[in-house]
Length: 322
Image (cartoon, rainbow, N blue to C red; front, top):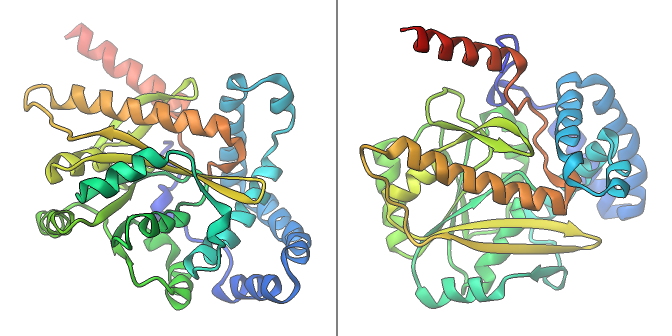
């Protein structure tokens, strides 16, 4: 990431709680059609004024395009990406309020969900910023109201978090702020896993302070992915699942995959093994991005910049000369 580019955790959210409440009120009073009409100028303003988000969306769609048929490529543009994000924000709030009809939720991999239920074990569930991760709350209904602990790093979105707490009708899910995984946090999570809880963590945003990352291929280019979710999984010694929730027409399609029964890393080859695991996760995220191109909502610089690549090449050259 260029030196003059802020890390995603340092970017202040746009808008206000009042503005979000107004949009939510419009939806509740007038319905989705009117909400969608009013959303257009709101997202147009965001599109014009947020250069970093616009450029990041453009880069993502350009990297994604070669993986899509020509017809689907022509349907993609950044403004549609922004509008999809605006609609997802409403869906996120509705999910948090428990207002999404369970009939609109389709479990595409019921056998994996049945496996989790039959085991009675706690587990780590790795999600992403693809689709609407709040709908993962529906998973607990399939698992006899199992409790969820959702690990978040959202100090940059305090206003939105404040609103979501006001709207919260879900007593079975707890948001836990995690900036860095301390021994105390790990012990707390291990206890919850022992009690059969599911720990939810995103696997597609790097920590603010570099270090625990792997450089992997994602959509044909090199990017940094965090190792934190998989390091945590090895500490918890529990099964690891991937969860993706994609909106297709009016329904939410939930895909749950077994990623590992238990991750173990040898001390001497830990970094190399972590790189392989993170790469495998990046490939699965890529798979679902191709299924729903406009639903990966990561409006921040993600891939290695040309300057970073040159620095890396120079560092490699210096090592070779020594």
